Image 1 (cartoon, rainbow, N blue to C red):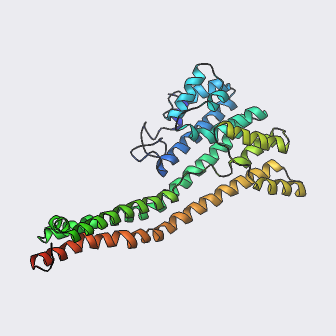
Image 2 (image 1 turned 120 degrees about the vertical axis):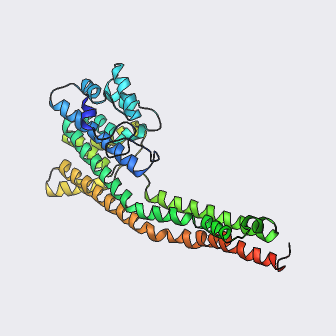
Image 3 (image 1 turned 180 degrees about the vertical axis):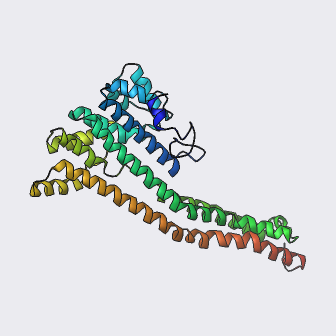
Length: 331
């Protein structure tokens, strides 16, 4: 059994739990991203343990990734097995999921270039990734009720059609045998589709993916801890992210932290790590707040689209059928 499997025993390949890398949920779901963050965190922890034990970097990667289930990690393992150095394998990772490796890869690249100790840096990114996974799961829980409500009310127009048919009304006939009925049908279907798209957009915006909060301050702190100057540490952090296909802007909050460190005579690296943790806490609270307000925002497509569609597709056909049967509707 490899170290990677030992660190991730709870979820089999393709599972959707805390230790898996995906599952039946869609690939960009919050639960899937939380599971991937945990897998990367456990990879970092396994590497740190082996490095502390004196195992070489390439051998550590081979042991940890022996049965990795994340495709991006499997490609890295294949490159290392072919003789590539871990830093080169991480930088050359390709594929749609290669960006998932960026938090772990950036720490490795910066530590290697700066000559910093790898194990402490890996422990730090593992903690940040586990924190991110926990935050994603909290948002998933907060979004569960609004998502369920949105799915439920999205079926109201179909329920209206079924109710009309249950009352013995020829719903389809009422909606297709007259110009007015066709207009009602088209508007009702259009409102139903608009409501679903609007709801999906609101939920998707609340669960959008973002970079790992506090990533740049943590990377700069690694360089400073290795004895690099402030400018060299910042340049190395930004260049490493750009090398991984993520041209992140230089974090302006770093200037405030460095100014405080200079005035107080405190270690800049420690203050940057503290700022990174604070940024992650702030991002976590913001995500929870956005998820909590989603339930209110979902009332807008309900009122503007779904309920009018219900009236058009559920009530209007009954009225049209009655008018047609009494001769009150000119066809």
